[in-house]
Image (cartoon, rainbow over all chains, first blue to last red):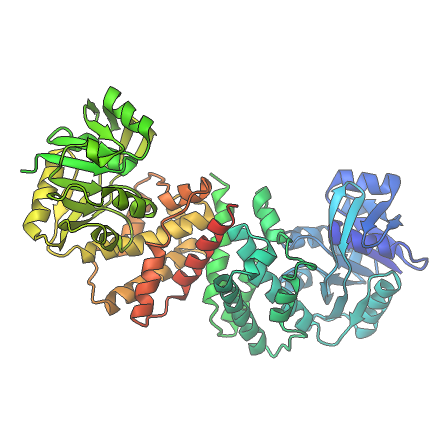
Amino acid sequence: MRICIVGCGAVGSLFAANLAQLDDVEVWAYDAAEAHVDAINAHGLRLSGAGDVLGRPHATADPQELPACEFGIVATKAMHTEAAIRATAHAFADGCVATVQNGLGNEETLASYVARVIRGTTFPAGKIIAPGHVQWDVKGDTTFGPFEPQPAPMAEIERLADACTRAGMPAHAVADARGPQWRKVIFNASTNPVGALTGLTHGRVCERPDLRLFVSGLVDEGKAVAAAQGIELDADPEDLIDHAAKPEVAYDHKASMLQDVEAGRPTEVDYLNGGIVRFGREHGVPTPLNHAIWALVKGVEQSWQH
Amino acid sequence: MIRSVCVAGAGAIGSLFAGHLARVADVSVLTRREEHARALNAQGLRVSGRSDFTVRLTAATDPDDLPEPELVILACKATDLEPLTQRLSGHFAGATVMTVQNGLGAEEIAGARGDWPLLSAVTFMSGTRHADTHVEYVLDTATWVGPYRGTTVDDARAVAELISSSGLKAEAFDDLRPAQWSKLIFNATVNAVAALTGLPHDFHFAQTEEVSDLGHLVRDLVDEGKAVAVAAGVQLREDPWEMNVLATQRGHRHYPSMLEDVEAHRPTEVELITGALVREARAHAIPVPLHTALYRLVKAKEAGYS
């Protein structure tokens, strides 16, 4: 089986290095960062932290070098989905492409370039600490399911999930993967931008009772938009938020969006709060707080242009 | 005609008042820092920008060292009003005291510290303080004065005439609340959005082309404020949305003080501006979810300084 990881940042590298352990899987890693690609080809892709792994995927920054693949796993930041799949779609003419990205709307973008799309949500996390070397912070599950308008066959989804599981990245194939996806989107949309706007870590956001109430206001809007689509969340985002606030879990964690803002990088707010607002509009559900947060974070991004 | 004025607090606004009024009256300045008072006594105060002159005046950190004035202008930021009025307590029994702070509630704070007759004012002028002895006059917009406690519109008129004769703009009103509330809603909206986004008050605040554009949020915040004004029985003098649009068209990118405060990690005036609006809303049972959200976010941002 041949799998191409599209976007080999932290999360993409977790998939690439682990899948490369399997004898029956040939792994390709496409990424635009030449230094990372060169390091992987020269010394392999190293993971350390939650697991110590050295994988040897074929890495390239040139999409024309990609052979035909049975599976793609797209792991870019959401704002790069379109460019990444436009460049690599030819490799998946007969294959299926899964997203393990954050936010809403990635499947729709993939579906305009490839025929068979897999909706996915993943919880493992890490960060690149040097070219070819990724810190694996948290282990976690991945859920795959068909993207309803342009689905991959269920048997193929199961093959992909099985390969990931055997490689040490536990994955489930389910008929409706929207529940985990919306659970994660609501969690991220309700906490990340609050951290980004205030500069507070997750735990400090949650220990301010008035701010925690505001977070619940964002969660409630997200839940209402999910419910209007008939999506059943697989867990209550409120419980996950409180769990993450514990000192031993993620009290001191700076949300990725806060890290983006501190570094002056574009955020994924369009695909989180912006996604909730767009789906809310389509289904007639008002989302004023998510809309406000979306505009504020866009304002933060605009402030850097001065 | 009023012949003697004490300006208490010599930031940008206080310096603009002191500098201009010293051309038509005896002006003393109450400062917080000794070296500020010494510099003013030694070098006078220079005003540049729309005006260009240097005046002599008397300055001290202790009210006992200043002559008894007919009018006291409390020109400090809202956050400094409590300690400033504490220092004035027991002094200048014959003077009328005028507040010019943003938001609501400055008159009550001042009134609790002495039996002085009170005038209420809002100012739209702006300046940049370049040094202890140099202020630049930037926006030549007016100061509006009205009676508050133990004063009449004639008293307000006398002060407005004095200010006008000094080269600044001023107008007197029977009831200041329509103007004060217009500015309250404007400041609650613009200052909090600026503080959270890092944007100066520029064209983004009036932009409504894209769904995520900031103008939608600004307009929704103004609408919440208007509903509170209606419930409080205040007929606004100006539409805060139009004030916003006009200000963004002037081509001058104004940095609201709340933005400067968060950038310098200083306490902001959010309590007397947004906090005051939220409390008025609660008193009149008007829901203001967006102002409530901004209030919580700015308070949390202040908590994040440490």
